[in-house]
Every structure is written in C-alpha cells, then in structure tokens.
Image 1 (spheres, one colour):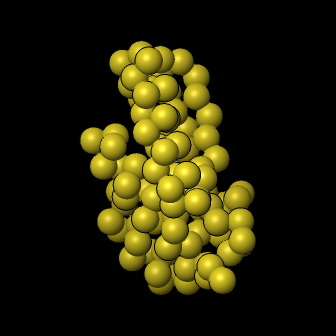
Image 2: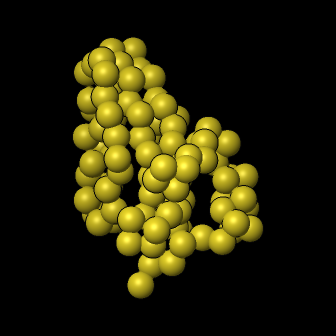
Length: 96
C-alpha cells in the first residue's frame, strides 16, 4: 500500500522541489513548464509519459500551445506520496 506523506515529510520533500507548488484539490503538487513552441512542449510531454508509464504513476496535466501544467497526486494514498516526489524530481531533470 502506498502511504500519504505526513506534513513534516511533505515540507521536507518540497524543500528539494522549489518550482513545485502545493495544491489542495486534489492534495498534491503542481508546476507549469513553458517551452519555445508546441513541438517542444509535446516532446517534453512524450518524455514524461514514457517515464510515468515505466513508474506506473501518471500525472494530471494539460497542454496549451507551449505550456504544460502538471499536477502530481497519489489517489490511492489520498494525497501526496513519495511516488509523486520521485516523479517530480525526474520531471525536473527533463525540464532543466
């Protein structure tokens, strides 16, 4: 079973993810990525999709032209879990 992070664990994890913002509905973290054009944004989404599929952990996201908005939450845990933190770090490495 995947467990939800405690408030302390969440605060520690977010200290290492300065570009991610806590969200309440659903409880998780969110980040906006902006690219030069649609092609770059879609390529990024493709790379994230491959990582997410391998991790069996899928983001909630939206794309409008050169923007990609991502929310990470673990529905089975009822909020933020270590799986979200791990995926956020991997996503950050792609977006850098």
